[in-house]
Picture: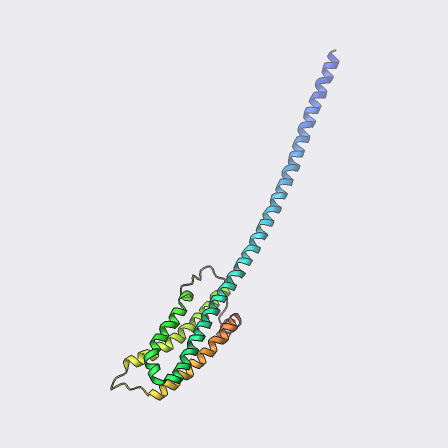
Length: 202
């Protein structure tokens, strides 16, 4: 009887130890499997995040290029109108309407000027930089004409014919430039960056 009881104790102890070892072994396999699955999930999440970020930046770049293109187009149409009316209205139109046209150009560019550039890609920051230079240059040139008109006096006489011809020629060139820039916005601005030897990661 004592032998039977002893054998039961040994058998129970063996199965207890065996069960413990097997349990630990299976737990390790389970933990390793979970770690591998977690790692795979993290990699999949990271890959998805990168794809989503790439798509977001791509969509944002497209939206920003559309905004710049629309601004260029509005400027082109304004300058073309100004050019045609200068030809028909002569110096009187130049004298009376140039200031108003400057206001229209500035209004056209307002959304562009208010744009937050902090979240843009480096390429888009460079494009905005050159687009702003182009738009500001056009407006500032016309503001110079307004200042000349305001400064005019007996001691500061304007050559009306030469001034008008300069405005007609300048407005024609600006309208053509803006029309081209509106139809080839990314290429146009990237070419400007290359010409000026400015890196795209400002």
